[in-house]
Amino acid sequence: MPLRQAVPLPHAPVGKILAVLAQTYPQVGTALDFTSPFELLVATVLSAQCTDRLVNLVTPGLFAAYPTAEAMAGATALEIEPLISRCGLYHTKAKNLAAAARLLAERHGGRVPETMEALLQLPGVGRKTANVVLSNAFGIPGIAVDTHVFRVANRLALAHGKTPAQVEDQLRRRVPRVDWAVTHHRLIWHGRLICRARRPECGRCPLLAHCAFGRRLQRAAAQPKPVSR
Image 1: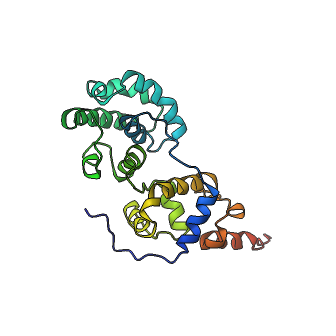
Image 2: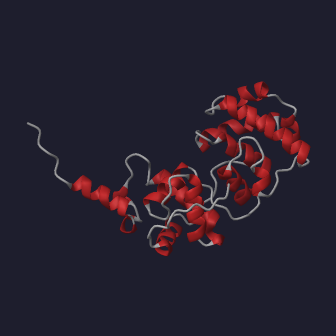
Image 3: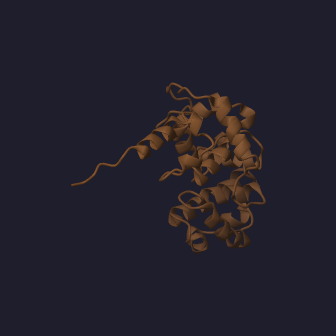
């Protein structure tokens, strides 16, 4: 299935938004701890429906037991489960990690592949995980659309999509390729710190002047509340 989606690009001052994000979050990167592409791949799979902080608490024990793809390839899902049980969906994640490690060992000599196509063949790996690995482990530009990126991009009208694929496509078309990875991180941090799903702090948002969504919330909050009788 091709990435490109037939969705028109919304109007937004892209250059100004990117400049404010760069000024607000000058030094950003993934919050996941890793020392190898394999560790990043595993940590990113675990991060689905789980906080990066919790993943970072879980992975040291997991990597002590299974430091490489070859080591994990010899494990069963039942052996992996106790080590990742604090992460959500750990039954499914354990099965995917065991199966992915076996494929890495059998097809790639235990190395994490450096192409989107090959990564997507691994169980439990979608475009978001693949983009995280490519950009953070190999320096290959990519935009990983997680819940924060999806929400913030739509609110800022950087994208107008109903699916992560649509949002990724539009961001790739609007953001300079050299800035794909850092923009991904900046949108994540903005979503975590200010533009949260519930009760976004629009009043202190440096992007309020460029955000119609935030200005609507501000106007609604300023309306007098009806008096109940």
